[in-house]
Length: 120
Length: 110
Image (cartoon, rainbow over all chains, first blue to last red; front, side):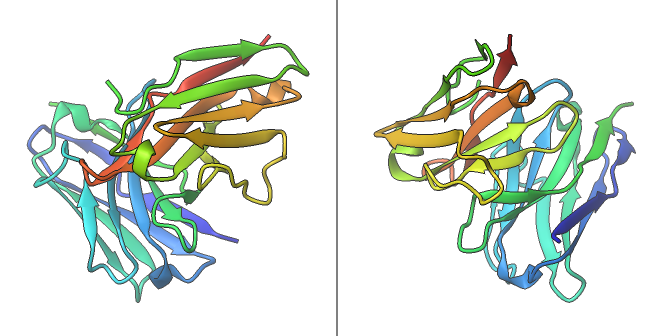
């Protein structure tokens, strides 16, 4: 069974940093594209970033480009999102998601999400 | 303002067929496949349709997807109370070099 478990959420001040982790199990982690998607309270889904299987290719939403960094440790089956220079508008539940095998963007499995709040 | 446009709400009675539209442009739906997600209240999203019209094995065949040009649609037949949820379309956007989501459609089963 595929499992994705996010951690690392919490409260941070504007301008601060936070690192999210996503522990993956139940599939060949190094073989699949992985994504981060966020959802502000009461709002819709917003894509944040993606990374390919060996970590050599990444993409970011314009709203986080230059501030957030996606990475992965295939030996530890873990996905990361390093968030710097955080803003009020980064407040959201952050989901990690696995793309369906053979697909880059069809997000077949999702974690339960981790809440990030940005407040002074 | 989402790149993909969906109606904010839709409704139907049990047993009815409802459709949810998703409008985009040549840089996203027009040049990429569309995926649909269902988000039940308080839960993580679930992949409903991938590659325009393909269903994961666990998704009932009451759900179907289609795409034409720069628009896509999700159809739900034999509407059930448990279908009450938010539905999102998504596609890769070549201009933005990222995934774009629709704003979501809240489906109410009357």
